[in-house]
Image 1: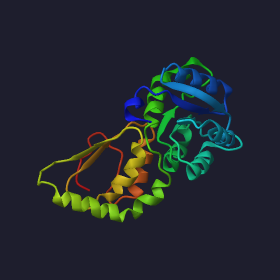
Image 2: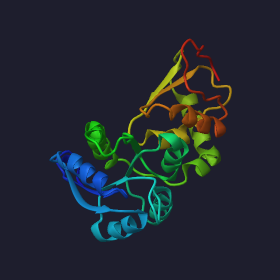
Image 3: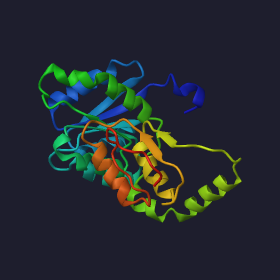
Image 4: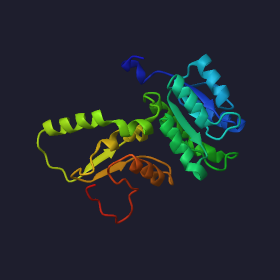
Length: 239
């Protein structure tokens, strides 16, 4: 796709959900945008794998909890074969670890569905879903980030060399703002910072309530820095 055509191109979307009602509603929400076309719907991950081969969508919206093949197994198989932008759209508040694992497996975004699915409340996510699907189409999915991040020593050396050659400046804090694909990118970036990095680092990202603490804990596991969810009144310090 040429860059000058990207803004006006119609993106092809595959909707994957085991609920017929949700497939219908999500399709309606997406097709309200003139830049999105739902080219098919699938009832589970197994059907989705087949339809991707046949339809070649630009983006997939994916439920996580499905019979036969769930969303996580779909991601493992599809990303190993051919990475494709995936927006997870699931009721996963009671199992947030599954949503974070989906991001680790290559999904580029996450939208939380309302618990009262069989009502008009599901339309509340329409604007967010459309925006994230459009953004996801231009994000490069990555597979196996958690495994790759600790081994990124060459990148650490490159980053240190670049910092040493940069003009001398003084900063009190480093802030990182991320959007679509950001949770994946942070798994590459945060482990590159050494434990003695001289100033605090603050990260701003958009995640549903209840997920940021678990996400911070996962970053902490692969980082020399201490990574925590921000709390009111908490001191911001180096390290």
